[in-house]
Length: 233
Image (cartoon, one colour):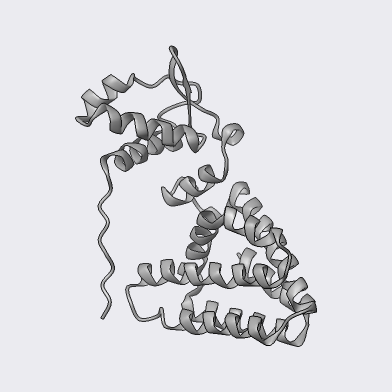
């Protein structure tokens, strides 16, 4: 029986989660100025260095704007955000009813476009080595079932990412795997959300069908199956 490692949040992560929660709840408004690093450190009973790192991380994710000599302000993350913003929203539950938001729908459509382009390319020109790798990943995905449901979904999402990344690599388009890797963390989180709803077994079945479509050279059916997998409501 496998036991997953227990990871305790650092004080910096707790600080980030607390500030982010107040931003997403509307308690901290866009343009609002935060207390100084010294004040935050004193109020939260943590070191100034932990506060500094946490604020810089939130700035990097597009949630804060740090202006030297002026202070730290809540940013409009819709304008200043990036892929880290999207991942943070998913991780901290900032997107409520994720499937119904414009942000998540847009990301899912982007993923679908990239995945379908890759499966069409691979279906048109593939070899047994590539197909064997895809089926091996499906086999590994099957072995995930049986543990704690939350752990299963997170681990399964990693395998699904590997599956589509393998398709990108085997498609022989050199840019696709690089682009796919860029969105790795957000993609894995989205897949984990999907798998929590549909289950690991259903996901395995869909990926096996997708492998079969590629083996037959049926790129259009593979693309339709990608749509069902990726942007299914």
